[in-house]
Image 1 (tube, one colour):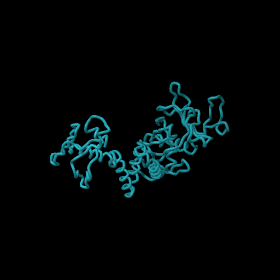
Image 2 (cartoon, one colour; image 1 turned 120 degrees about the vertical axis):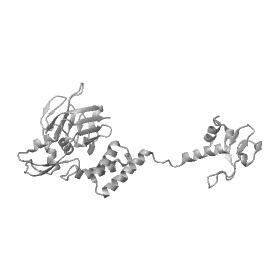
Image 3 (cartoon, one colour; image 1 turned 135 degrees about the vertical axis):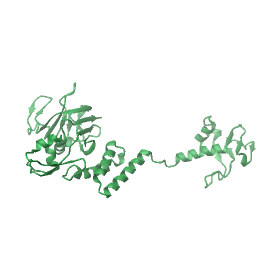
Length: 327
């Protein structure tokens, strides 16, 4: 209330200016029952004019119109009311309602796309884990199964086809085609239907959160836990893919060359190398023989992943995959 009077009089807060309403000042109907106000530390006002005059005159010649006081009082009341949700939050809640509706109607692809946008934008942090779990469940069918979906291409095997050439035609990897279609070998049968996931992959890495987010056509595929460089050695920026290797040899920065399988080789089962930049060279994403370090800052600057995770990621990465590392 002191702040209220300060606003009305524009003269700051003075001890004598604490105003109290008389009994039943504010009624249940939202109006004032009496229009006369008295200053706590003053004597009776010089003139208590009639209610219709709507004015009180004090000895200090301060005039307060009750209609003005009502407006300020209403502002204070409104300010203390539970605020309405911002428009953006309303939209997000509406989006979740749409997701629930789509899922009930069997529209898993549409629901996945909405959830993907919500997750990538991070606009509902309190529901981020819940959204991620739902995305992973939906992508078991949309991404990691032979079931057709709108952003997939269903290809019929022709005479003379081989997986490597099919993969190259669609800018993907033959390993991913095998994984999605549940194929144990690369043998093809004429007339066989293959689900193929064409498009551009992107990788978003958060050093702060120790996460790697894989996107296909800017939609969520999967999020993985990672390890980053100790002493903030992992660089930030946008990187391109230089090379990919299975069962990589480790060239230690301290000297020494350690083949895959040796106890000194810490690279795990896969290597995805970055193209060099000025003063930034030798970095990449790889597996690890030290899984307990995932989720910490422990490497010499590279991105470490569990071997099972980096093997899955490896199948999605193509030469034009963009890798963005952020703090």
